[in-house]
Image (cartoon, rainbow, N blue to C red; front, side):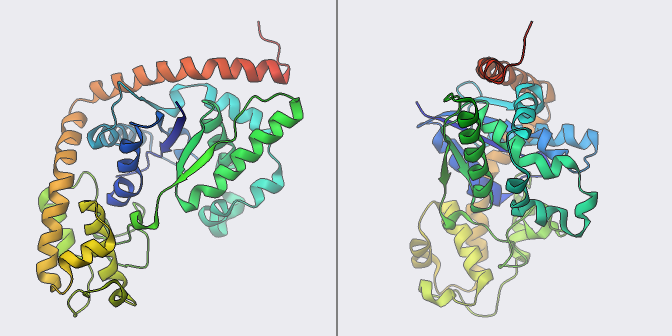
Length: 332
């Protein structure tokens, strides 16, 4: 069976965009692939994290995975720092990847901004760690959004260069699994901006930890315009907020955008927002309840991560052994 690796940073509440754009798809992939899901806490510290908050966020992300339907008994679920192979392979890849490759990574430029000279070395080199995350398990496929596709290309380049440099086919060329644009969820306050956990206003997003009343309040306050919903897809031109809310409705109902328009087109926002709230609460309510149960039992979460890390190490160690032998490291 083909193997998937995918990870999420524990840097704050996961939101509806994370669920619809990634986590829900991962749940479905469990039936087709061997899956390795990782809470990438080492990536998180490329920028400053409060230690206590990082611990809590790691548990929250783990709880969200499980509550959304990822089965930690059938699949491997762990936190990155618990498996030393990630750091070990990342250092080898630091010595394989070229400076010119990293200079082309657009996300570093975006994240570092004007303070590039003050950015951490980790933030600059984290694409090499991402490559190590994937190749440590010889993953064949990686679910990625368009913004991560460049990093997967780098992982492929590193794998190819390593294999070529040492004359051995150690690593595969992982393939991207890119989900459609229909899963792209935008801000509730600005239909042209992606929903983000870093946005200043909490009303811009629906968090996976939000209860029914909070979800209802956020949808009620979501930005709209004075006109009723269009009755055909072409009518959404120039109406980003309307398109976003109907797109969210379609994704939650698991129907196409055109099918969603056929169901709710022509309705005033006052009526549609009530319909959308019911659907959102119906989908997210059980997830929220299970997350709360798990977060009230941190020892249960920690035990799940510990078991996952043990399984991950069993897969990773032979790969590290193979890499070290290939490079020529003398091991006692």
